Image 1 (cartoon, rainbow over the protein chains, first blue to last red):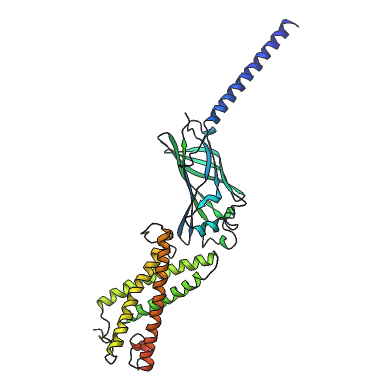
Image 2 (cartoon, each protein chain N blue to C red; image 1 turned 90 degrees about the vertical axis):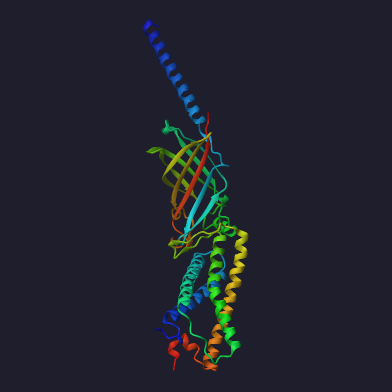
Length: 200
Length: 181
């Protein structure tokens, strides 16, 4: 082999080593970015859904929720939020109402036990607020949603508060006779208070 | 100057408005509580029933304010004393019930966790927190009060008819002036 060929082979090897090393570094960074995603503190977090029947607000709380949040205002591109809600855990404080809302006309919780939210982008709104965009799934249907969130740091936790308003008819929640929005309004406000322990 | 032997037109108007509201609310109450299941129509009836109840309360306030400032005519003198006492007692109880019945219904709704939004537009004050045990009690109180009121209304109507048809003493014409001869 000529000296030139040898040096070309060598420099290519170095190039590959460099690429390999960069990939390893990127992977490490990727892993450490993923390591900042922290499961939410479900015991301190709340998600409620409020509907209106002939003007009267009716509130219920989802007692079983889970999720992961990775929020870094300096790295919004890699920040995200994933939430899962056990639909069957919805509690309006009234036994017969709860039973009805889990039925086929409403949540159909037996067939569609989970509602989920997965964020796609988080953008700053100024004034400490952020616009979160993502996909919300309920009763087998998915819709793109976008809503403002205000993060705060409280002690050792990040706390996220906001409201996501959905139209229940888009998900078939309250179907058949119940689709009539003059009795139960289409808009439902999903209010959340998510507490995430900060990862050190 | 108004005639002290007659009810004013306002008093008559208020009497009949409240009478129709009470009858409508009671009728709707009977229908809605006999509906099975959980349907939008049932929900509508419950809301309309509450709106009627709030309206009864509003007119009850107006009725009492008017009566305090405009004396009712004295009972017809030919009516025996005992009948006068019974009539007054029924009237007093009805006055009390047009406040107590709607109030019991209102607090029942709050205790059950349903604030009242009058006509679907005006949220009324939430004076107590949801309380399932209290809701059960108030449900019974409301039922007792409205069935008592129904009974008294029945007595009241029968009494008016008795005085008009049997005694022919002009009592009913005081609330139905077109009956005057």
